[in-house]
Length: 312
Image 1 (cartoon, one colour):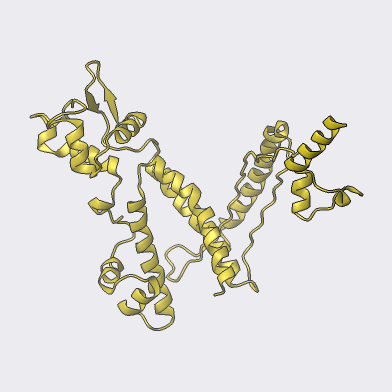
Image 2 (tube, helix red, strand yellow):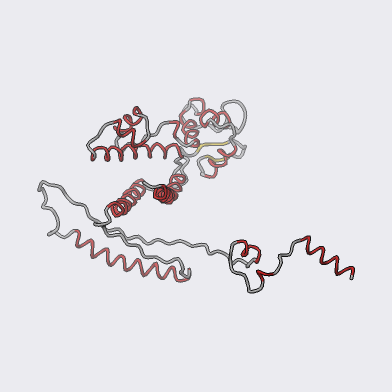
């Protein structure tokens, strides 16, 4: 792979990861947990590649992923439905909350989190945060936990845990799982087309970045109605009894689908820039006729001319 192609792929991956990172932050997932997921994904992909090449072994997987053989072997047997979550990979705020809800020094006899003073000897928020986050500065952590409404400040100034998680989002698990499926389907199609340009799957995007925002609601309504009409027709075709495998008949089944997505965003428009003769000349741009022949005025030359005028 050429350096230019590798750079283009890295840029594409960064664009893909940006909305996923925002999703992870809203869910209280830190870089460590996300990194552990990438390792599992790399091992699975390397296993698929090595099997197709007839060299399915741990050494080949370690070579393709850059992981040590011991780590590659341990990740190879991870169930897809199980998310690796080593304690050291968890978000600091999540670790602090977990300790607040489970550590015997920070719960009452009934197992409820104690109200903690901010600073001072244990039990205090300061000692709890240092014990479970490893971070000596606690102000930022306290601010984020308050912002996420995972803790609350009591009238006497002490802090009380009210949630077991740092996640700011309150989504349904099934809705989150659906995002993974839909994004995966779309990426698989685009990657297939990149690898097999001679037999691509249908993928088409129509868009404009020069739309008057006042027309946005009307066009979103029209696009949604048109998409619904088409989707209903395609759904009837996909579930036609003639195209379905007979119930109970052995044999592989094919999966086929069509995704229709309306996306919208506001595009920042650059402010018009006042032309600068010095800047444009330095950039190699054409200047008005005659300007390029004039001597450029410097502060020193301007001072000399003003002095000559004063002595005349």
